[in-house]
Amino acid sequence: NNKAIWNSRIKEDASILFQKVGNSIDIDKKLFKEDILGSIVHVEMLFRQKIISFKIKNKIIYGLNKIEKEILKNKFEYNKKYEDIHMNIEKRLFQIIGEDAGYIHTARSRNDQVITDFKMWTSSATKEIIKNLNDIIKTILKVSEKNIETIMPGFTHLKNAQAVSFAHYLMAYVEMFNRDKNRFLYNIKSLSECPLGAAALTGTSFNIDRNFTAKKLGFEKPTNNSIDTVADRDFVLDFLYSVSVCSMHISRIAEELIIWNSDGFNLITLSDKVVTGSSIMPQKKNPDLLEYLRGKTGTTYGNLFSMLTILKGLPISYFKDLQDDKEILFKSNEILNNCISILNEVLKNLRPNKQQMLNLANSGYITATDLADYLVKNHSMPFRKAYQITAMIVNFAEKKNKKLNELSAEELKKIEPKLTTEVLKVFNVKNSVNSKKSYGGTSFDNIKKMIMKYKKDIK
Ligand code: ARG
Image (tube, rainbow, N blue to C red; front, side, top):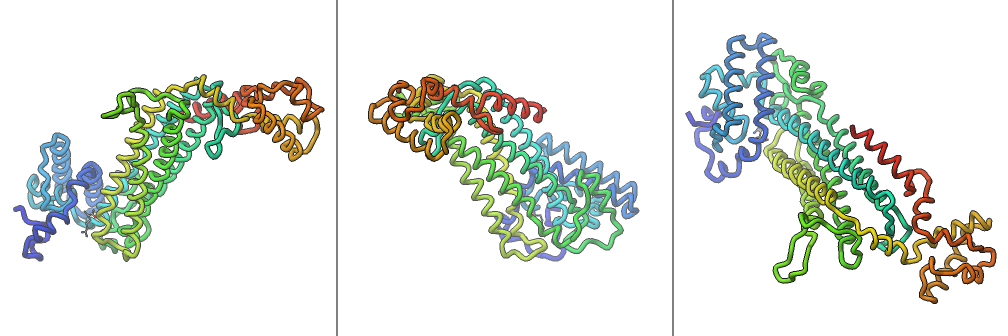
């Protein structure tokens, strides 16, 4: 019989239009593994609690295993008429084992069933993202190791600020991804309570053992309140927020690389694998994939706001509005994993244009702060006074159309008589980078230590 489960009460088929929009099978069929596992553990518990017989439990488990094989072999026929993955599986179970299939839904509702499946799926997806984040961190550590002494300008306001190691920039990305990782790890905690047994919204009069099902399904404990259980989608929000932050990080990195790759800067060269040509301009190698990364962030924010908006004003317990949660989360998950892989590919193959980096680092009076620091340390004056003298020297260099490292000791002495030839070393950008030895600064040693630390952490 191909009737809906509730055909004894609802006499007419759903309108064609509702059949079309009301089903979710194309989306939630992703949950088949979790659904089957959840059902197997559920009937095992029903048997242990003497709610169903040994024979029926085994029959149901046999049928469910058979269904799983059919799905894995692409032999399962999904029917939109049965709305979702839960009903599709239950209907098929009836075909395989007959009327005894009807015992499976004892002490259970789709409301607790779906959210159990979905939490398990989200937990696996979260672990997968953490794995991908580890992969990209490893890539960045490798590229960093090769570029500890690659000097480039550090920018503020996109104007040359102070010289840094290219690896120091890259290691900043490691910090960002490491925070993302911790955010996702934290989410696993918020996924640790098992919804199964909340039933429709009240719990059940059957003597079920929620601790057993919770443990068997990999949760720490059952949820505390049956109404909250079927209403709660906070874990979806946590996931979507974490995805949004991570893709925001990816977008900032992408934008930075786009700028560095532009002809004006020319600090890096992207591999041919990640650029595209133009249909009219033969010379072009455009950073399309980086732009894709920047653009996709918009969709992840949109998804977070869709879910927040669906939940706003929705009374607690279950409502159909909630069904959209899965499509939204699945999409954000897919986008993020794609974006992490793409960025990984970009970073693996990216080449720093070391000479151009150094040239640019030597322009824009980038060692001015080093000179001011030198005056404070060697000629004991307050920083503000040193700042003024340095500004005068920069003005002088600008007027002479010289870089700071092109000024002679004599020229410098004219502005500040205390200066000796020793001062000239501060205009060397490599010295400048290596002098930033404060914790977290860009000195070579600091970077090496940080790389070592993360290499250890990640194993
Ligand atoms: N497919 C539904 C969903 O994803 C399952 C829960 C249905 N419950 C209900 N009372 N209609 O939300």
